[in-house]
Length: 178
Image (tube, rainbow, N blue to C red):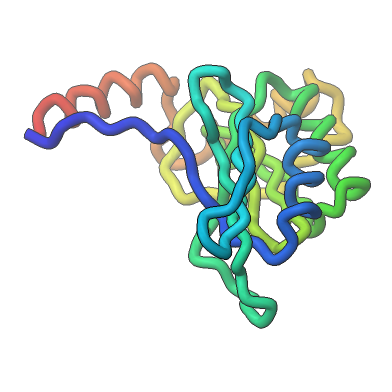
C-alpha cells in the first residue's frame, strides 16, 4: 500500500525574481509569506492559503540562455466563469503572453505564459467528463448561457461523455482496488 500524498507547492527557477514576484502577486493575488537567501539563491515564498506557508517558491538561478522549462504547466483552479474571464482580460497588462481560452470538456481553461514563458492554466470544472486529451478553442465573448450551451453540446458529442460524478465514482473504485 502506498501512503497518501497531497500536493502542497512547487518551485520555479527564475531569471528575474522581482519581475516574477510582481506578476504572481499583482496578477494572481499571491502574497509573499517569506523571502531570503539560501547560499547564492534568492527565494521568494508565495501563498494564497494560510494553511500553506507557500504554494509557489521563486528561486533565482535560471540561466539566461534557458528557453525551455521541464514544468509543462502550473494549473490553478478559479471560482467561476467570471473569474476566468477576468484573468483572461487582465493577463496582457501583467506581461502574460500566448493567451488561449480552451475547453477540455471536463474543464474550461485559459492558458497563458508568465513573463518568463512558464505556462499557466487557470480553470474551472464542468459537470461533465469526456475522454482526454481534448483541447478545443473556447469563445469567452459569448454570454454565460451561450457559452455553457455550446460547451455542453460539444461535450455530449464526444467519446466518454457522462456526468463527472459518475466518472468520479468509477475512478474512486479503481483507486480503492489498487
